[in-house]
Length: 400
Image: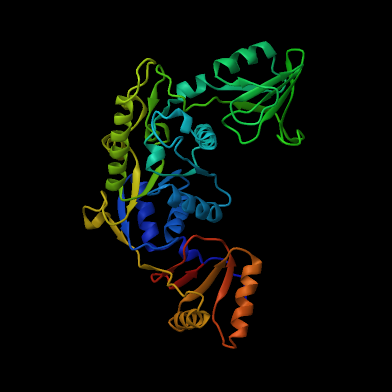
């Protein structure tokens, strides 16, 4: 058993370099022939070699979660963010997911500060419009150590943000005031903050554990953001593509199907809106959600790398790029078949790699192969990937 680094050719090959050249010329292209986690390797390569932000649009939430996990492992030095939908049904406020709202707020906050993040999302999330940067800035309370501000002012602002005052904070959207201490759980962070005052001066800012109340880390500043998914009638909202940098590379499968999903969601939102009791003024669906056409109209501002059976950007051979990869075969724990496969690929000149979740799993493979009393040509890599694949262009077997 020998640990190995992934061959550089998995990240940099002829087809990838052609895509990078097209992106540098602000062109879009369609790609085909990818399988398994080879999609993640291509996306990671584009992120590393262009140093541009990426928006990877998966077909659904489950696939987006797998893509997110792969990208986190392939880009350990890069900001990888998950951008989910905020609720399950339009206009059903009781079905809002606080954890998802927090992740959405975190993404919007971070992409205002950095333009190099890799964002993973899916149609249901992009269907929802977001606050403009100006509206988000208006709804952000920034505090820093040494700042002069009264607790009464913070109390007033948090009520305006529709935060709930409680004895002890336990979830986003809550705050408490005890003497010269303000605890607040912003929707932009996954832990609450404790702000200590000396008179009207911010003396310290710390995150703390809800259960133990013990401090976790000290900070020089923080930004308090309310639930930005509350659909207030007078707020200006835009599509997510209008919010992100125009340098962003859109990495997506089957854009026509994606836009069809958005149209279906919009139709459901319209039906839900028509059934509402309009005793309270509600925003129209067109003010809150995107249609497929709106999304399509914004695409020409970006470089798009599209893959799948039905693509927009493969109208000519000059914009079509082909990879030769195949999915990992299913061995159903029949290790004799796995050994035959690895050795056959080795004899054909392939690098054979087994990606393992941890070193214990790698050792287990080694032990099993020893029990078979056969010579096995393979190397292990501690890298947890969603799906294996075979790269025939570069003669690399990458199994999970």
